[in-house]
Length: 73
Image (cartoon, rainbow, N blue to C red; front, side, top):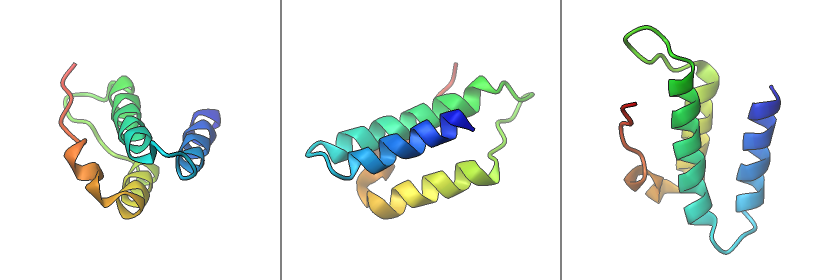
């Protein structure tokens, strides 16, 4: 829960910075890493909160799709 609040805080803070796009890309990458750290068997499964955060970030920063990529450990 604390990690999610921290991520939300970073997202809100990025709205007021001049480098908001770069920070949003970093948030997406951190989210992808958090998903992979869970080490689910074989296939990574997104939770509803993961989907909600990704949709929210996409709606705030539509160009964020350029930063999203599949990360393989």
